[in-house]
Image (cartoon, rainbow, N blue to C red; front, side, top):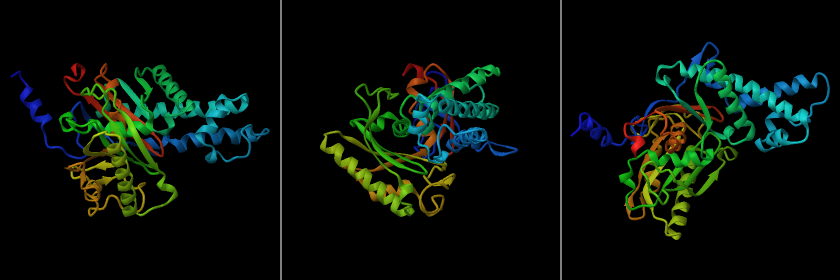
Length: 361
């Protein structure tokens, strides 16, 4: 046996735990980093609200000298589609306002990234992947590209790229990397959940025809979304609704002769403890205290759905930025150390190191 292989074998066969730092293909060096500076949380300078503020500031400046080309609608009421239309439309002044916001946001985002890179756990980072809802827009992609240009101009040689999958799907697909592939033997898919401060998504993630260890062709077979922010449900009602969504997906899969493993992967905000409870960071989740010692989401789901097919249900949970980042694994074989930043209501973050042998898999 080669030197060090015994240790590697022990690591691979370590007991499965929620929020684990050691996964089959990567080591998680850091996540949910609450980096601060003199002004507070660094991540507060790069999120959905920050971009809206930048755009609103430009509109206020223009109004001092004439009409606002965007009109009278409040900035916070502008949807991504509307902003996209302004950027691509024939009104050059309106497009220029959006570009001004993109430039200002990029300047701040570059500073945020530079501060993360000074953290010891983020040293020697080669690539940063940007996910979250902001990425799924033309102005978001422009901001990502502009941020990389600004970093390089300041002598920081790093790639900053949009996440490959649609962010809504990335938060589900990444769940396949939370467990070793042997757990999926004989099955074609798993169930996955992505819980956020506004929406809950549940889906069936198909492993793909190749069934390679890095799940390069995994994809979302079917999914459902519930905008819980509109309903303001209690915590127990949220779990009940989620269980119903999952049962419906299980029934659909079985009717289509797709055999899901008796496994549910969960992506959830916050620091996830080994027992599946949330240590902190769950304050935006719906209805009640998700960080309570008396509440455990994986256990609650296993109680609600005790079996999938003929086998007992197994649930594995990790941080939502981690899971979204894990979906990028098949595209990270040419680097060793990389990270994900998810731009949404807040700025999610996670840092990864590829494990030895990943390139050969």
